[in-house]
Length: 227
Image (cartoon, rainbow, N blue to C red):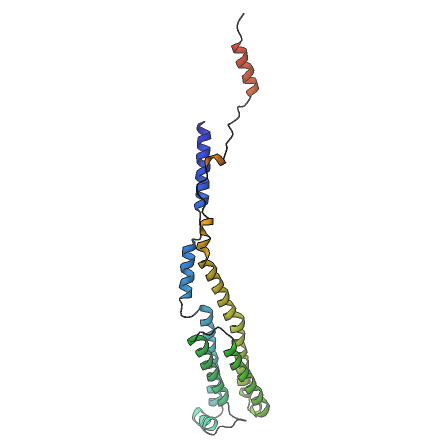
């Protein structure tokens, strides 16, 4: 009898523990998503903005190196900026990088735009301008930088487009969907915690006695009257 009572108590304790197990509390998950939602900018968007900044700095560095190689910064600045010539100058490629940086940072860091139209405009302008410049200008006859600057600017612009369209916007959309699903989770939380299970739902059969037939025969022999 004691073993039967202890087994019933143990089963109720086990079921009560299972009902109360919650390895990842929903309230803590909601707080974590709310903390992410309150961020001024998401991690993936910050990475995109850093790459846009790298685009500007890298093109600027290449342009400064080109100015030094071709006769000094002061002389070449006067030649490429003050005496600007579309067919020979690299200054417009630097201005194009500044335009991309200003437009993309304003759209996706300051205004937090969640659409691709801003980067579509900057990439289309960059691509069209560079194609026309390479076809009509004489940059290819000015050494390695005549190849390097247009190609680098073109590749960086398209990498920015790929980052935004395939990384930033899908990642933020999926994070928002998960955040909304976790916000609605408290409505389903009572279904996870069931009340105490009544004893009537469980039945523990009594333990069977070993060699019951032989014990019964011995007991019957002892109870027989002695003649």
